[in-house]
Image 1 (tube, one colour):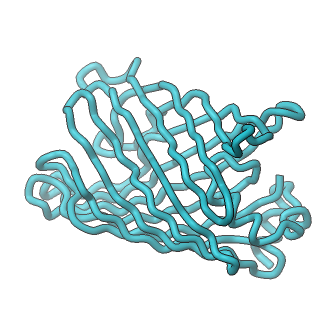
Image 2 (cartoon, one colour):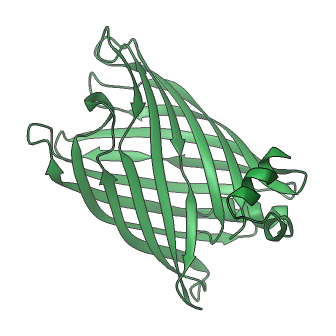
Length: 263
């Protein structure tokens, strides 16, 4: 099997993760700081971008999550977002595709739950100037704090993830980065490993005083091919608020394939 061959070649064994129940995998996939290696490939489509509202954006986020055990009590969870972007008619008459700016977050997280059953993590977030074209990135290096807290009980998952980024270097002519990201979420997982999730991935730009507020509804299913667990997610989003003349607006879509790997 190709998947298994690739894992072995990369030094991973499929045995330990195959022994983990699909219910536990579904639960961990709903936890942004779970101690489980996963590699989501998140495909997004949005339209009505730009001043003419004729622009389109296709975005593939590659989002590996890697836990690193510090000791018996603490983990560091690495979350990376590598965007691959295709813009059509943004700005009008221009098409561009390539890699955007990478966001790297590191969460220091206790292995044990709090006394009331919460999981939390906190650490630095970094915006790396990796865009292959000025239209695909901020032209800035930025950094700031990030934190997440959540609770999982009786199939339910709810919590929030937040970060704030300030630019500290980069193109002096580019707009400074001063932005807050807020992602409250709630979801429920059934006995058949199907998860229903609702969240926002909102950003407030303190320089332009603008909100971007997509509301996402997603349905995902954990399954196995052979012994290899994975997840497939379908979702729709509605843009409740976006910067004037920039967009996107209206409805968009999401498709996510997640490969689960052993530690």
